Image (cartoon, rainbow, N blue to C red; front, side, top):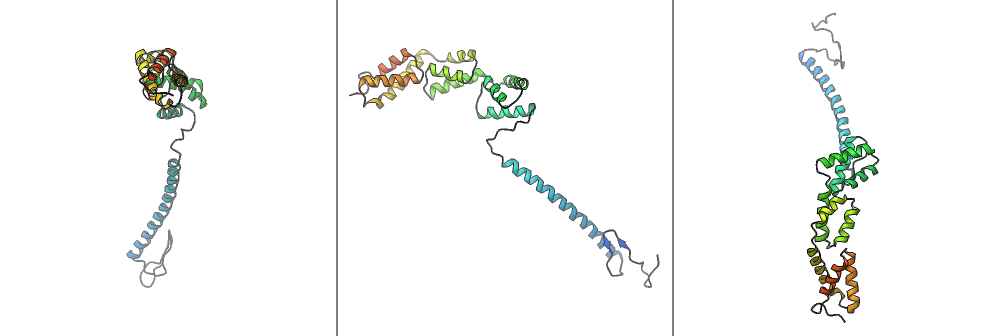
Length: 233
C-alpha cells in the first residue's frame, strides 16, 4: 500500500462506514471508530429488546384483564380437568355426584372424569359426609329448617344416601321440637291482626314449609298461641 508524503498510511474503508475525510488516522481516531461500531450494535440490540418487552407487556395485560370469575378454559388433558375441578371447589363445597355431573357438562370424557373424582375423594376434597354434616348445621342453625326440608336439600345436592342418614343422626327429636317452638313463637306476634283460627292455620303452614312434621307443628303452634301468648281479635 503506498505511503503519503506525510508518512501516514492511506485511509481504508471501515466495516461500519468509511473513515472521516481527515487524513489523521492515528490511535485516537481509530478508537473512536471502534466505539461507534459498538454503539451501533448496542442500539440494534436495544431495539430488539424493546420489541420483546412490548410483547411481554401485552401478554401480561391480557392475563390480568381476564375476569376474576371466569373459569379456566377447557383445553383437554388431566392438567385442565384438575384446574376446572379446583376452581369449582373454591366456589363452594360439592358432592361427588355434583362434581361428576359438572365435569361431564364441560365436555370431559367419562374416563378422565372418573379419575379426577377418585383423586379428589382420595385427598379429601370431595367428602359427602362432611358436606352433609355442614349443610345440616347450616340449615338448622341459620335457616331453622325441619327434618323434611333438610332431607330434600341434601338429596337435591346429590349426596349419597348413607351420608345423609349419618348426618341426620345429629337431629334429635327433642331439639327439633324446641327449634320449631322457638320459630313459631317468634312468628306469632306478626299474626295479631288475624283471628285465632286463621292465625293457627297460617302459623302451621309456615312451619310446614320449613319442613317440620305434623306432630311437631301441632305442638309448636299450640305453644306459640297459648293464652299467655299474643292476643288475637
